[in-house]
Length: 122
Ligand code: SF4
Ligand code: SF4
Image (cartoon, rainbow, N blue to C red; front, side):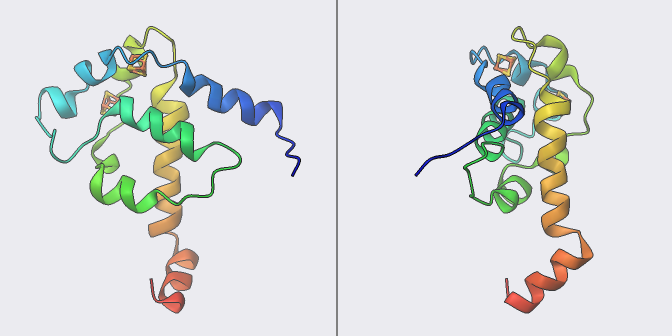
């Protein structure tokens, strides 16, 4: 099967692949550092990784429940400290975290989606 992927979609995912796993973003995140929410909150490095999977044009897996319930995405209050320290200049908050938050909102808080979920029994 032949796939055609737009350059925009390629670039979007490539940004997340630049991560060198320095974990500076995890280190400065106040949710982890000051509020010690390590049990409830995965942290920016892992959200970048998930964004790289989620935004791949051929990826069809639904991670909204995982992000909301197990990885604590809602605890991020988009202060952007993680973005400021990233040596690879990955726009962690704007390009990874906020779009992931939008997916969670669409899946769990959009009235139409909620209605469909009810009808489907999920
Ligand atoms: S934007 Fe979110 S993940 Fe990044 S440092 Fe702030 S609270 Fe942590
Ligand atoms: S600061 Fe940037 S390069 Fe370092 S782990 Fe976080 S996302 Fe990856």
